[in-house]
Image 1 (cartoon, rainbow, N blue to C red):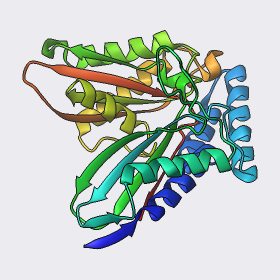
Image 2: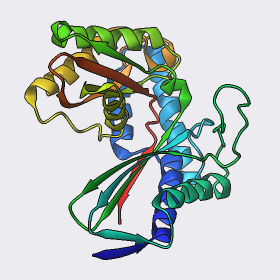
Image 3: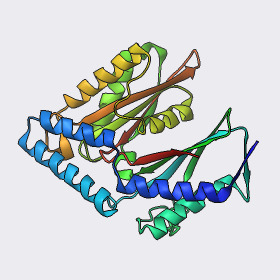
Image 4: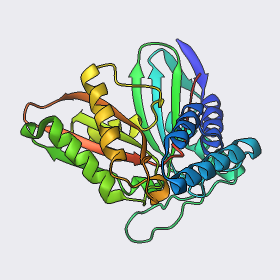
Length: 281
């Protein structure tokens, strides 16, 4: 049994949310540069140049790359041989978010009650926490700062089994086309297929944090990812919605077993910033 004080969790979470908001991953930067070279639209090429420059400034000067510094989402993979001491794991995670958003001067965007008062909590908490327990004595933390320009464009749908692959593709393309320029393309599109109503959405969110160099290990799903990317880029929305061939940088699919009578599908749209960072402690 390995003991881990909650202060370690708090510090790691704080560091990850600062990194997520300041530094865009190399995989995203490489894909943006690759897309910039391939983009035929002069206006689209110019937008991609501005995005790349913005991201470089954010990393060099420790500045948020976007004014919407996101709702904090944390995926915790907890080794079953870890004993958390000194307090609550959930409290420790929220303390890390609070530390990052107050000391890092990041915008606080969370309201305590969603429908009536909508009063800002003032520290970007509470965050959304997804916990999975696995063998081992390590804790893996994935921090996602999810802006709502793109989050608001996400959708889920309970397809029928007969809809099949073509139905999934139609739904994903419909979601992106309806989103248009609103989620700040170029995008990373996460697709969750299977599971249940809520699991599909969680998988879609997790999919947006996968490396852009990754393709699904099942060649059938890898082919689906490729076809989705081709179909989305043919929509012509382009960088910032000004037209062009670069509407999506990557489409990621995560799948799970499901009921014989259903085909749940969720699409989580993420802007080009794709702000996430991870660490194992």
